[in-house]
Image 1 (cartoon, rainbow over the protein chains, first blue to last red):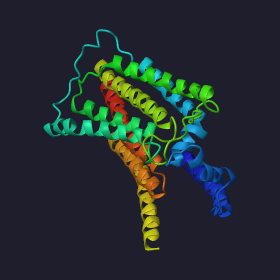
Image 2: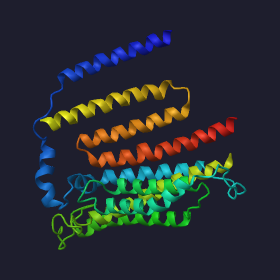
Image 3: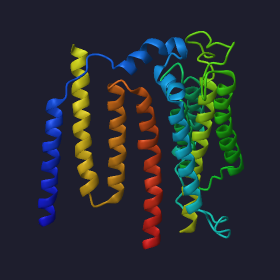
Amino acid sequence: MLKNILIALVLIGFGVIFYDLFMVYEAKTELTDLAHYYAKNGANEIGGANLVTSIVVTYRGFDTLGEVTILFVAASIISFFLKLKEDEEEKVIGSKDTTELLVTASQVLVPLIFLFGVYVFMNGHLTPGGGFQGGSIIATGVALMIMANPNFKINTQIIHWIESISGVAFVFAGVLGVLLGGGFLDNTFKGLGVGEFGTLFSAGVIPIIYSFVGLKVGAEISNILNKYQKSQKSI
Amino acid sequence: MNREFLFIGLTIFLGLISIILAFVAIHHKKLSVAVISTSFISLFASIIFLLLAAPDVAMTEAAIGSGLTTLIFFYVLNKIKKTNA
């Protein structure tokens, strides 16, 4: 009873605080100075048709590097805690047979999902999407494969190699920006330009960086799913 | 004008459904129903993001929030059920 009264009091308190905020709020009709700068100079300086990607990869590239690092740390911790003993590694997950419908659908859909994921991260500078989105779409394809066949074995060696090489290549592209361009993760190298606006090979190194980010995110999330699937063996 | 009205109406409708599903997630006895209702909240949130002109965020929310998180929740639920039984 006391608990419910406390909950009600907390809710009323939140209501009072947010009512004040709500009454003061006015919708902005003009862009702030920073947003105005991005909207005005983004297309010329970066050359990407999708302004969000220009900001995420170049203007705020350091944040993206941090996000990729956080995801890497999370994947490593999950791999560490879900490690199996050696005798459990060979066990078969006991499950009812998956339906014919799911198996056939996964055979048809998985290649298409992978293709769509690759499309999303290759065209991140032209259409909505990018490395994180494309990577997670690829991971949903892996999830469908795992659901269709619970004893499906993913080649972890290949995943580890893809993950490490893309991570190193991302930082390497950033360092190349220091040597050839204006600073860390700068997308335009001297003498190369940004390319024609709106084509696939535009916006400097953004498509290359986002492809590596996409591969890295896809590999990491697939690895997490693989670990969770394998952890069902130790039951 | 008509289109704008439709957008606002759909956004409010999806928001209300999300609140109802949140109550279901808290108060339902079966955990699997709770997990599925949270995944539906993510799905509706991604539609709301799309309506509010943020397709980049909507893609991530649809793939991770309603796809992969649900799967991981079910793996964990399965493991907890079998080890506690």
